[in-house]
Length: 284
Image 1 (cartoon, helix red, strand yellow):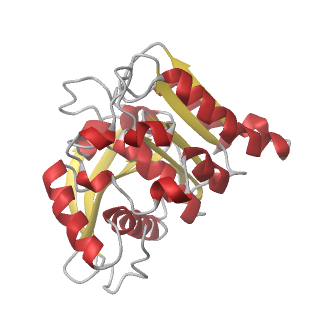
Image 2 (image 1 turned 90 degrees about the horizontal axis):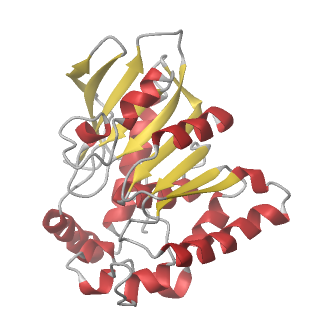
């Protein structure tokens, strides 16, 4: 991924209103990161209950934004307002803002490549900076920290957890896959990255060094769930089962198979709120 090292700027948080209702209050927070680069995300806390609250990082997908995790402007109804549902269930929420569109992600990818790094590494560093800030807030119990992302946000969940030990449990929604086939095998049963214009998705050495089950082995022994829809065109679900079996073996050998779960459902590219909340309630 490329290690950008510790932030070289003071945190210097700038806080702006985001949203408020009877269940929660939320604000945008912008933090110093590297040079003129800033880390930005929504921080939200429940209005009911006594803090500090366990925390869920709710990570949006591509062509999206933190607003959609709260159910705002979610025309495709794939997020199901899961950040709000987490807040109603008694969790504080961090919703990071990623570089979201394909063309800007490609531009940042080219610059990061020239530095010998990746955009993935830069944005993982940003997530770490947001966690640093949460640790300064009395309402956030970062000793009970989970991450739940969909699509590109699922990728960030799977990539961040191996190198961010502060995250204690994760839900990878609409991303976990048989990586070799997903990246280079054109097949009418799934979409293939080799045949689309998503330059940012290609990580040097990916196919040689690791697949999705290898990344879950680096998350082990922490609890992890994959939410996969049989009707989701990003994957062919029998191949997901094959890769998941390889992931589960790491947990089985340690006698902790209950910490890894596949929520294979009949739906499509979408958050599964109820099963995700049940998983978080058990492990955070």
